[in-house]
Length: 200
Image 1 (cartoon, rainbow, N blue to C red):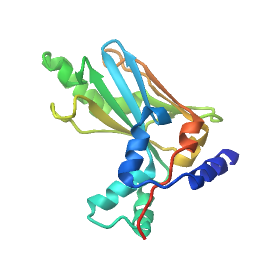
Image 2: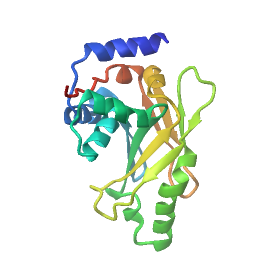
Image 3: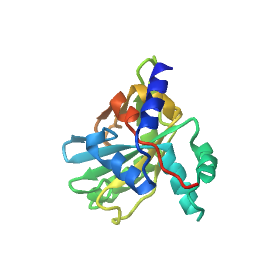
């Protein structure tokens, strides 16, 4: 409870940022919400996706102005869950595209990202006895137009307020699919997250 209050106090004291500036702030590795791990030729980047940014995207996609009321309505879609984007590069290309020379391995990689990865990703929070498995891994194949990386949105049944103490995200890795990856998000990263600026 004290950690949540501290996070709220830090957010209130930070300057509110418009969506594009907040997205850039989160993407800056110096702020601790975008982490990288690697194993062999695989490089993985994991980025926390704040609910406010997701809500702002919903409002924009609906063609509505970014008002406080519209954001409050869109935030309801993200209550009770936390999201992280996992971006994968294999030998400098999209994870699955790097395997395109072998149709069997390519098909297995696409299937794994679409259906299997969620079973191999866990979130551990300080103070919780058990790790939490991802509820879903949302993957849309880019077929070579994904800026050189494959991205999967990981959804965990954990309210975002519970991340205030930090979080460890682990990709356990299935045999013949992906190596083990670890991302340790410190409490200070979540506490320092600026609030989203909205219109009237």
